[in-house]
Length: 66
Image (cartoon, rainbow, N blue to C red; front, top):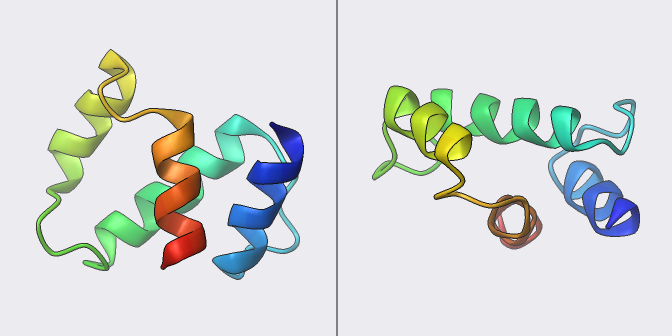
């Protein structure tokens, strides 16, 4: 999983961040806050991450595809 997190962070330009789930969440939330995915609301995404509705794998795929 660490390798995939590293790929996602690198693809998003977060090359100096450690390959951790916490760094991945922070990166993903930064992109949501910036409006990268227009259909996602920042507050809703935080809740969905906390509930497990948005998974680590989904965040990885979204950032790599970005």
